[in-house]
Length: 55
Image (cartoon, rainbow, N blue to C red; front, top):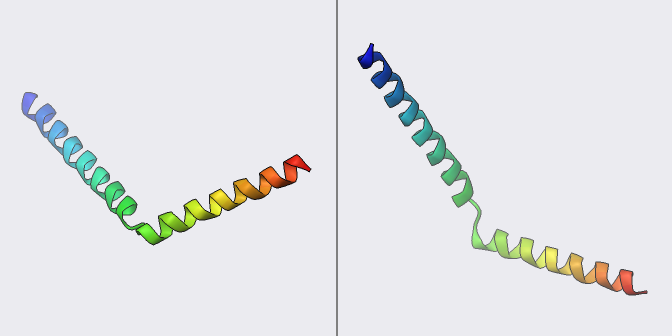
């Protein structure tokens, strides 16, 4: 019985580790160019909205 619980815990740990690795790979695929472009677009949108709001 104890061996069965240990086996289940080990398998769950490995699956969790693999899931975390996949999430980190997805996050690392974004380059600095993409991130800087998104920041510029967001900043420009804020500037445009402020100008329209003040009129």
